Length: 316
Ligand SMILES: Cc1cc2nc3c(=O)[nH]c(=O)nc-3n(C[C@H](O)[C@H](O)[C@H](O)COP(=O)(O)O)c2cc1C
Image (cartoon, rainbow, N blue to C red; front, side, top):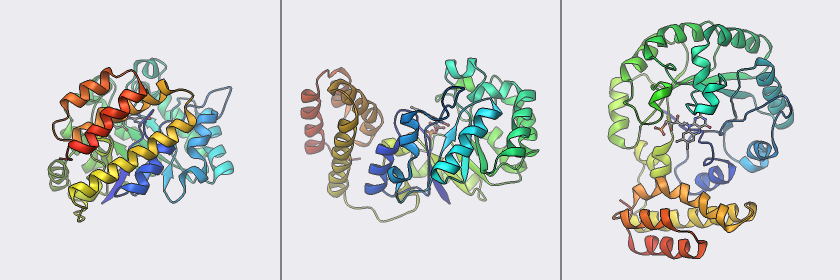
């Protein structure tokens, strides 16, 4: 099985990826949070830093692009190739955010199939890189999935990653496993599953139902349990104390590297709070710490809470 680290805007940028790759059982491939090219800029400076090869040494990274304009997509893809040597880009057809969807991008593009077909026709005619797609199964109705998949089948998509939710499910609605099963049975290229794999049990259930599945993309599961890929690969993991010490080192590296690029303590605090939203799931008796971190307003207070957590709370 190939394991992919899902793109997660605001979290899994190059600083996070590097730290993750150094300390934990690594995925085969990382996808960058989406790059959003427009008429003014192909890539913003932050996006450039995220894809710079020296910021991603030793990792296989695939940049993701979000747009509904073939010309912007092509400009960004060719730039990623000529400037940095990338050979594959991923198209985001999944983002459920209101502002993105209202512009007809992300999962919003799934309700404009004529436009999407024209987009693909131009992209696949002109793009000199491989193009993979990460998609939801519809915008307003999963019944549209057959038609969407039929459209995808007309093009040489390198790999299709399916998150079997529709836009209005956001990240919470029930996974639509029957809809994924349709892709499993009918898609004639490489297929990757994404969604709600948080434990070995949920992974085993997935592969027992879909035994020929080649790839699984993990997002929140890896943020909550950075050892998840090791568990899924049935690696022998270090004992609890050693894992906890490693998570602590990971946290220290993130604090240092984010601290060096963010302009003030408040921004750093906000960044670290986002990390703990997921990572606290891995700690025993963490409810009090969760409240404390959420309410905390000063970096000095934050450091005391986190030190106590690492000293006195075991990893599950
Ligand atoms: C905070 C956050 C940011 C995300 N950013 C992106 C993104 O930039 N591109 C993308 O395709 N999906 C993005 N996603 C969706 C994830 O890649 C993934 O599809 C989703 O979390 C479901 O997988 P999971 O259940 O393993 O987390 C984001 C999700 C979250 C929660």
